[in-house]
Image 1 (cartoon, rainbow, N blue to C red):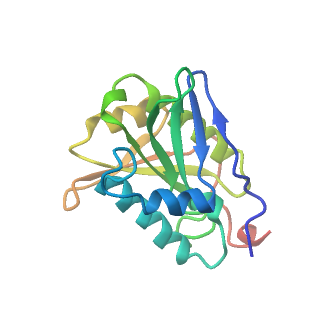
Image 2: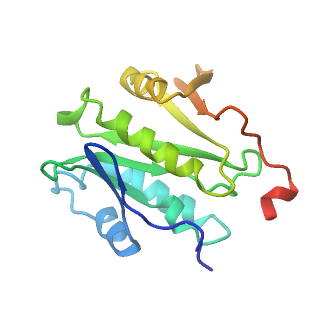
Length: 186
């Protein structure tokens, strides 16, 4: 079964193109050689493996939620980074409708507002999808720049784990409510 409700569409912002990987491209990037400067990094491969693992444990095929999205500058096609949803709206029974996001920016493009632009666009798109009521992100304490990105995008820090050195950020638009048990299925 495939998730026909969520299309693989390219998002465009003023400066960026956010391109979701189809299955073939996902597998190709996931298995990029270690000497590939963009996709061969350990961090990128770990993120792709985690997405693949989470998708494999989803009881339905929701590839569109688990694929990685590559971020490119419109002006010259430069690869800026990537952004992904880490779950589908129905996967986690305790957080139905709450989508986790993860992202990474290439070092050369940090501090220029690109990730803020990408997170804003992906947040807006996610909230336009059925059964999504909010977004969540975890940020390591050693990454204050990511905290600033989320804050600029309207996320609010809601929790912190000293044991994990991680802050939890949420974005739930005013008036949005968590789905009831029955709404999950209709």
